[in-house]
Length: 313
Ligand code: CP
Image 1: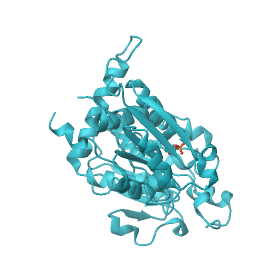
Image 2: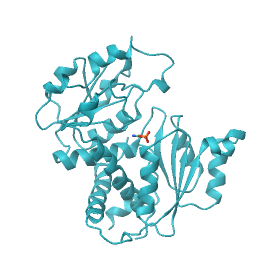
Image 3: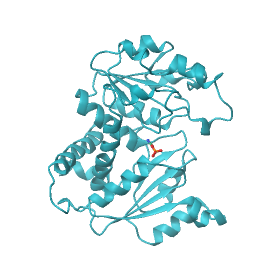
């Protein structure tokens, strides 16, 4: 019980700097909740640890998976959810992020879940408000809950990530998912590599303790886990490669390139997919793919985090 209290009323802004033991507390809670969820047959989920608690989903950027799964996760645990979308709020009349958050805080929620296009916005907010906060993705900085659900999914399929080779492919430079995964996977002892066009590789990426591959087929040969990334065109002033067709030819996963994979390798993607660019439709739905497991586990892992942060004992 004492170990679980390390998350009590704490904010989760980034995976950088988390200790292995604190990460393991979340993954263990997620395992317990998944077991409970799969064994549940009644009308009301018995672990209603968020009953009487209110979670505010504060999204300044669009989302399908993250926002829906935070809402479902809170409701499964008996909590109330307030969904805020910038386009239909007083942000359109010039209200700032900080005033918006301060006003919502005055309504006494128990947890804020924040997505914002600006890297660093959730960190700033977390310093200004008293309510615990979860970063649901900020610019190209971090997306910590995505990394937690990714690690949880890898361990379900392949056992501990310690010593596993996880290959992240694509637009590493603009990817908050890549950054959060690199930090979390390295903390847990995985071997992490990246692969993609040099123009989409951040400078000095090796300093994060990852190896860099420039040949996708070669990289695939030793990978236990392949994480494909969408090209984040919304975060680039201009396209950093000649054409999508060319990108797909060199960096895409398709029926031909998966021929280089190990038999037990798994393919992941945080979504949304750009089918036919970084991944073909048949590969995304094929036997190596665990993409829908990632989505299912997204709800479970977010249940675990909210339970630990603001749930009743
Ligand atoms: N993986 C992810 O963050 O997806 P959404 O943008 O749909 O939330």
